[in-house]
Image: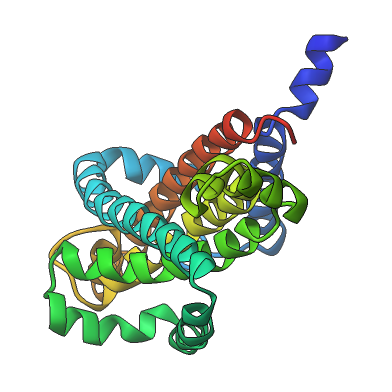
Length: 252
């Protein structure tokens, strides 16, 4: 019974069930409505094509993952550091936050042409785009979490001579961890989406570039294969974050 309960509480179970339901709906719709393959191919056909094109897909995936992970890490770190700075300097928060909201009121991919001009068609422009998208999410969530610390506990640490940075490290940051992990989770799909769309607008390699070229050549199976690989990579990335969440925020 204990093993069964642990299995049902595992984050893997909902993901597996969701995939099974999606596959059933996918294949059922093709059979029920007699959808032609050029509109919606069967998953078996897509997987078979992906295996025949493994080399190109893996090369594109590595390029996209490098950009997504690089921007994800950079944006997360900068967003968290900026949140700490704004927490320690409230007047600066009143200046920076409206500017950050104004910048992020525009979809991140709208900045892609500018970033391509500034940073070129290589990985740097996509890393910068992803960092912008992820950084704002981290900034907002982390700043909110850092402010949730009990004021009585803060005053107690001050009475013992603790400085602002020590209070942040020992008290505010642990309290903010659920918010920080939430931002990390939200950033996973955003990083992949922004990286792929950025590649579609201009890149030398990556899944986005592959999707763009395959669409131009009306090679829809390659498009679906690239989408499938990107989805699997995102799920693995997200699953890793769920595991990290359970280790870092074990008291929830």
